[in-house]
Amino acid sequence: MPDVLSAPLVVEFPFTRSLGPVQSAFLTGLRERTVLGVRTGDGKVLVPPVEYDPVTAEELRELTEVATTGTVTTWAWNPAPRRDQPLVTPFAWVLVKLDGADTALLHVLDAPGPEAVNTGMRVRIRWAPQRTGAITDIACFEPYEGEATAESTAHSGEFADPVTGIVTPARLDYTYTPGRAQSAYLNALSERRTVGERCPSCRKVYVPPRGACPTCGIATAEQVEVGPRGTVTTYCIVNIKAKNAMNDAIEVPYVYAHIALDGADLALHGRIGGIPYDQVRMGLRVEPVWTEGGRHPDHYRPTGEPDAEYDAYKELL
Image (cartoon, rainbow, N blue to C red; front, side, top):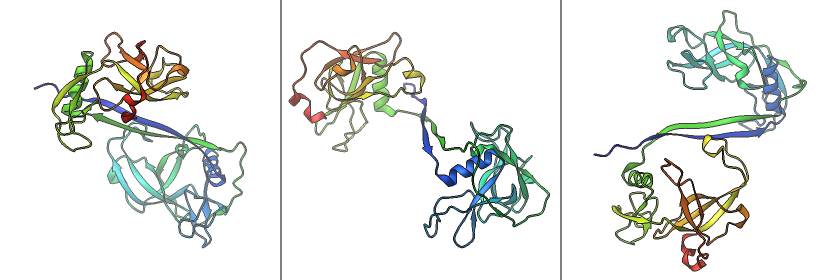
C-alpha cells in the first residue's frame, strides 16, 4: 500500500480595519489603563462597547468609564494553551462583568488550576507592561478579594494620539490529506508528469482529478496523462506581494493564469513567467518550468507556438 500523503497547511488573512469613535475610544482607553463602555437608551452599560444598540439599533455614543475589577459569570478551563493565546500556562477562559457594567467581557484568568476558579469569584485586570491600544493590553485577569461596586462615570472618550485602526489576524492551521485521486496526481507531478482522470460517462478529463466527475457525479478511476503544454484561458495581474516564503522571491507585478493543458477538460492554476506581464494574453501557448528537486512546476513560460484559436478553449473559460 502506498504511503498516505499529508501536509500541514495554513490559511491566513490579516484583516486591516479602521475604527469608529466608540471602538477607537475603547482601545485607546485600554492603552491608558481605562476601561470604557457605552450607555444605551435604557441606561444599561455595555462592555465591550458597541456603536449601535443590539436591541433597538439606536446609535450609541455616551461613553462611560467602568471599574477594572469585576465578577466571573461563567468560565471554562484550558489545560493546554495554543499558539498566540494570551498565556503560555494553563488558564481559564472567563466572562467577567466589570463593576459598573451590565454585560460581560471575554478574556482569560490566570489561576493555578480549575479548582481555584468558580462562578461568582472576584477578579481584577492585570495590565500588560507594554500597551498599544488592543484587547491584549489586558494581559489577563487575576483573583481579587475586594467587594463589588456599581459605580460608573461619564467619560469624554478623548485621549491624546487615539488609535484609529487595527489589524486582526485570522488564521487556520490544519493537516491536509489529498485522498486517492489527488495523491496519484501529486505523485505524478514529482515525476514531472501531469495526470487527470476521465469520467466514464461524459468522457471529460479532469485535472487535477477529484475522484468523481463534478458534472455527472460518477466516480472516476481511468488515469489520463495530459500536457505538458497548454493554453492560457484567462489570467490576472498580481500587484500585491504575498507575505509567505514561497512568494518572497517573486517580484510584482506578475501574472497568475488559468491554463488548459492539452488533453484536459478543466483549466488549472499556474504562474506565468519568461514574458513581460503586459504581454500575457488569452490563447498564449505555455509549457511548465521545473526547478531542481521541485515536486511541481515552478511556473509556465511561452512555448513560441502561435496562439490558440478562441474556439479551441472557449468552453474552458
